[in-house]
Length: 150
Image (cartoon, rainbow, N blue to C red):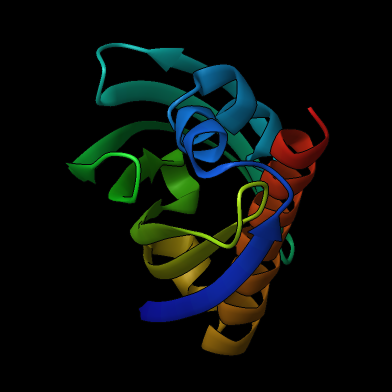
């Protein structure tokens, strides 16, 4: 079951600072809902452990996060895939673009695609879609708050 989520966040920080934060595992870990750990394996690869509750199912996902199509400091694609044991799997990615709006504000736009399978996929598309949108919103809001106030 695949879905697309789009949005934008205004961040009170210069473009370069936002770009650096998008590549900082400590900031990403704090912004990802349910993230237990995020370890940098290389400049473009990270290992993640995320605990998520979707409806009645709570699962721990062990996964990989990869950064692709890097165009510093303007855009990249972040892709992730996680396996949640009997709960199933989740994979997805987001195309992220940054645009300066003056010297101290950056507009971050994202277009994310998500796909789930296994037990989670049986929960119904409405629940998965609303949960995915909520999680994406929480991530980008938390990220914006952390970078804008950090």
